[in-house]
Image 1 (cartoon, rainbow, N blue to C red):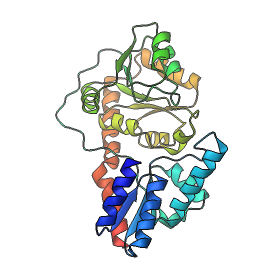
Image 2 (image 1 turned 180 degrees about the horizontal axis):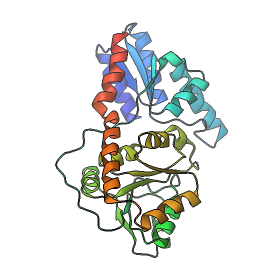
Image 3 (image 1 turned 45 degrees about the vertical axis):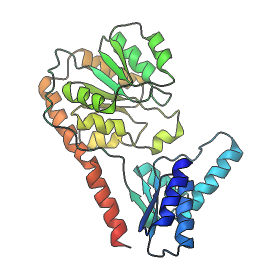
Image 4 (image 1 turned 180 degrees about the vertical axis):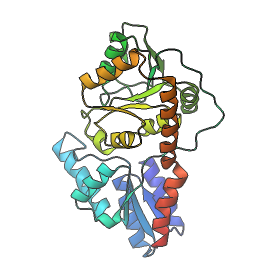
Length: 298
């Protein structure tokens, strides 16, 4: 709320051309400012960072939120969506397609010059992110332990204590929550495989954008990803890893890794393709495309 008040106060004092709100309420404030200040040539953007048809379990609270969201969608000039699935959801709810722009989450250019430590034997797995219900980390731990594949978990969250309790093998190591720059340096320096075991228990996962997967790719890490997030299609198309639909398929993948079926040569080919794909998601390129559309039409 403090950010909304500060932003609206700042916008009311200056001659602005583009107003970007990252939540429905701040967008409505921008719309009101545009009307009151008679800025017909200015643009209000709803930067929709997350989306879910059912935000709250409480029906009244969810209804109020959806009303505010619909007002923001209807009266904003453009809607930036972080995924194609979110775009479809917004259009199905009535957003004019010409107003909706694909603006995915991105990364800054990754530091160069860090050489990877050569992995000896089986390539380890790594998970980076919130240790929460949106990931099937328990089955990953169970399978990694069973097949003696090293697994590193970086991050914390509500499921961390439970997962530590069930992890009986030294093949799973919990590194805790680390500074972002340190995480990137670790990923850049290791021949690991990033794992993204998303599930559909949390409704917004389907509409989101898996930023950590992009960070895996940018560090040259091939990816194991579930079909719960539509981004799996990019992994398949660009041949940057493997995709699974259920526990049995994941078990087959981890079993294959444990038998050393991924060669060093193939790993390095995958790594090159991963870095190439990640370049599509550099912030500079993303924002250049997004702002060029806005400014060319104002």
